[in-house]
Image 1 (cartoon, rainbow, N blue to C red):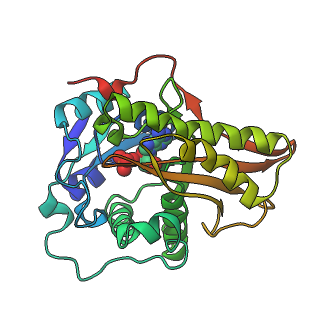
Image 2: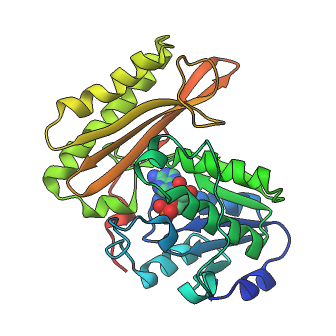
Length: 298
Ligand code: AMP
């Protein structure tokens, strides 16, 4: 694996079908599942590692976001990536950008309502990665459902010739969705956070049992979080997979997203609900059998 710091080097090293996995580092099995998918489907696998200041609000955790370059480089190499693109700030933003990317409507609700400017930051940095690295395929997690909607729409609107792949959520052994931010949780917070996955699992069961009312599914999702001390629900929303707008009924591909705060940590989770020949099928993702590499040092 080669580690490079510039767009030009990363582009020059890519050949054949280039698969890109954008990350902010402090990697875990969720990220590695994206690298695995890219490895199966691409000739060159490029993982980008950049903690993007543009997508953090002024009161958010940019300064304390977990970082460990050695650890990440080791994991990306072990996963079989070809290129680790780890730009410095000056490569990504040589000057204060006068050009940023705003994706309307799909960024208005849920995270967009709570984190103003967040999706502008995401859309801008992903646009730069697409423009600078010219990937044929780009891999994102279903974990960040509204981000996936935003990236798909941005890429289509701007005619990027890259296929966007959305991959299932990878969960810790107790069901908590993997996130680099899980490292912030103390033991009590970790227990409170468990209520989110109970809400997700209950929604999946309700869908399989035939529930189609958006408000009812949202109540089912919210109940375990609302009953748990030490965690505050931001929202539980049934949304359209194409537009991220709220749905009254489950009558098209959807996701039920939960956002909650445990102490100073915001956690996101969701279950995508896909239409298949067998009817509506919830995708709760994959559960690890043992402890996550998230808690492993370099
Ligand atoms: P991040 O480093 O948090 O910006 O995430 C980089 C990519 O990994 C994004 O496409 C995320 O959606 C994806 N991702 C993060 N956590 C998970 C997870 N638990 N399962 C699957 N994908 C994930």
